[in-house]
Image (tube, one colour):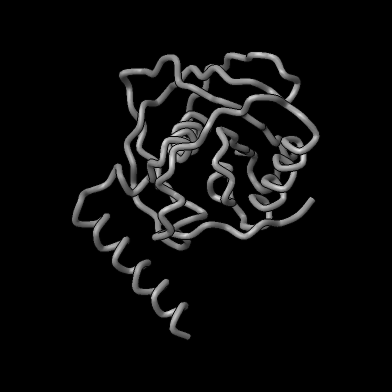
Length: 172
């Protein structure tokens, strides 16, 4: 397993829509393993393939608490089939927008269909932090960031901050 470099805002790669996974093979399983290693190292609870520069509809999640056993999950071509009218608000962060957090309102429950590493279709109903994490990561697959769910003023400030930081890195 290799820890891969993360794509950081304002990199335009983060705005790309990812293409569907066409087959489950050793290379895909290796990418999923690398993504889990990268996510755990960061540390984070979710990671989309686009965040490591791979525009594939693949995401990994582990919402186990620090004192709990790891429960890694891999979702290929995930899609939200249904969502509740009820909402939850969680403070979200993103490995591609380090050290920035904001409260985001999302549906409290979702039903997701996805392909597993076993090559079979699965359906899962999720609530709580798992529902929020699934929505956050599926957004990534569509080129959407969690800051797109906050006010334009706050979003513009965050983008400006990260754009300046990226410019300083290239001139340093």
